[in-house]
Length: 77
Image (tube, rainbow, N blue to C red; front, side):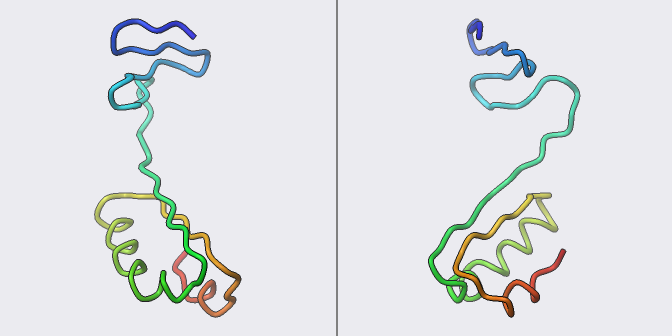
């Protein structure tokens, strides 16, 4: 890896050290992962925010919690 100023060059492509954005003309996908021990926390405090972030901000949302089939089936694709 060669570092020059705010630019980082790797075999995978160029990235700015400040923002981490790829400069290869590819669209950046913003990702967020919510981690909690029980699904009720996600249902109560996070789900509506995550839906909004996905719809309005284009975020790719991931949830990690205990196994809860009912919650899993209630999530949008």
